Length: 302
Ligand code: ZN
Image (cartoon, rainbow, N blue to C red; front, top):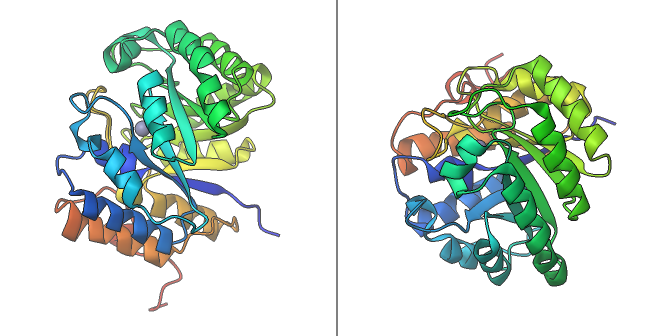
């Protein structure tokens, strides 16, 4: 049996939120439908933040009201505070992802909160998700480096992970928001977070800003992590992280893993077609992924 690796598609949220092209709600829903047709079973579809802060996510309520349901797809809604969490519940997200910050420099700019503030807030509002019967996960952003403060001590991650687990988060994601991780640091931080929060499932979120994202995915898989975030076409960024570029491309991750014998459940050709649709039809600008340029292997001509 090939080892299954779950790919969490973050293109409709992390991908689109910092793209220069603003998509109509109907085009976002078409994107989501194409992802489902390619085999995606779990995706970030919405972000319930203030529309002035992230205009590209202003229609998150409308998106959630239009996505196909009953297809075995888990839709994740992002929340940074109680108001966002309540909106995610109202819009019937299947899962809520609460964003913690590993460093105050980024945290104060992104959500006006220090690491301790985000842990306090999660402890206070986790009950709302539990009462609604909605699984709650936590992402620790800037877990490998802060664009304003530089290095982030691993103790910040272990503190946040322990508190997230205690608050009832079923999964903890380490987010390399600005793409500064290296594979050895990935291995070390996974081990430290596992010690601090042994009951939580781990998920990894890499940006390819400095071309290390696939190597970081490799390190995470070797460390036993089974859940990887990726965005179709490698689109994305972060409005509050200067020069942060896209997420690792879903098709690049799927190619690497499937060729090595892992099972992602995602159809590589369909994902490449979705990436090219983004480039040519939806966003109308070049995308970052390599597989969209080169195609898979072996291919129809080999
Ligand atoms: Zn991200």
